[in-house]
Image (cartoon, one colour):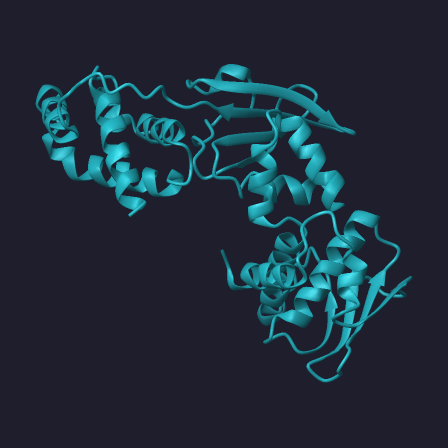
Length: 309
């Protein structure tokens, strides 16, 4: 989590806020808020940051309501982030050549996304939904953000393995978002339910005029049917596959996959590790070994126990 995102979380914690909440009321604790029509091309302007006791926040009413809301959270970010000072004219989609200005706008955008869609809240909301479509729609309803802003924030913020894509009416990929524990996206344009060779819950849905598909990947059944330790099992796998030279890579890959998914239930941790190995062509012979799953389960269980101490 970035510095700006941590600042947004501190603002919410101080006020005891979780979505949905009154953003205008929050903004008025940091400055004088006014909605007006701008004579210039900009989303918002904040005047007197670090100079006035109550900076002036102006929001352009020509923009759609979802953009006005994100802009307001963005302006709060400019006021809260201590190294943002003076008067700032904000362009939420800024591609300005001024490097320092672009950095400030990026920081304020990160602050705004976290303020409107807190990562911990997104995770707790996800747990209470068994349907990606309803989850997505509930986040939009409770936060008042745009579909695009939510799309990129919510799925990348999840611990659980999820892939969501926006597609056109011919099921061709337009854009994609995935959680860190989800498998990598195959290099294909035409999207089908079966593009992932893993167990998953597949959904197709529309939000207004945009179409989406999603995969929510399932866990591995934990069955320690083999009484040997993971070290003994791994030694057998390495000997029989004749890939002893890959031992360091195997241990590093498993440790990395575990770290990215350690907050998940053990069933999902094991599935995440297996998917990560499956993405490596050079390790295919190991993943096909009948003892490989037992190695993963035993190693993941040991790592989980250590991480809790």
